[in-house]
Amino acid sequence: MSNRTFTMIKPDATEKGYTGAILEKINAAGFRIAAIKMLHLSAEKAGEFYAVHKERPFYGELVEFMSRGPITAAILEKENAVEDFRKLIGATNPAQAAEGTIRKLYAASVGENAIHGSDSDENARIEGDFFFSKLEQF
Ligand code: CMP
Image (tube, rainbow, N blue to C red; front, side):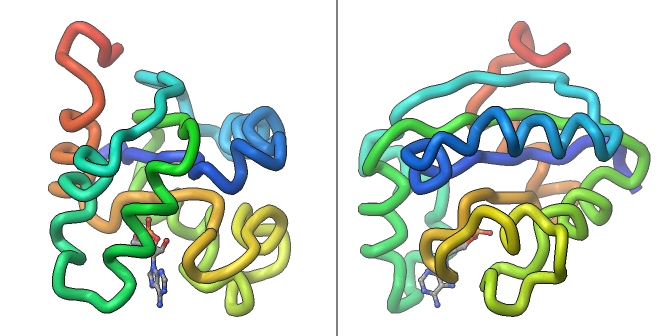
């Protein structure tokens, strides 16, 4: 069990002005922000981040979407961070997400699903290091 996870507030949520509300829910759920930045991913960088999904039929769509506009990337700290954060954001498909979860409240579809959360401690470290240097992680 690790105490850190990685998240991105995705371009759809940024466009709709949900960034502040989502950060407030993250804060209220007891996560400490250990790193944060807003940036616009190039298609190349988005493709690199999601390289694990390269063979999936939705990969092209995913890369295009994730490079469409700014995102907010963050490293979050809390006991049992990966699992608790995935509970807070809800199922990948918002139609299946539990009431009160971030995706139920703010996501439109399985593709444009408002927010990312790491699926393991190892990926949380890899993904956090993709966006933040050691000097930017507190
Ligand atoms: P995320 O948790 O960031 O990890 C991979 C992403 O791929 C996922 O959220 C969705 O945005 C996207 N994704 C997963 N399944 C599909 C799908 N069936 N169609 C389109 N996009 C998908």
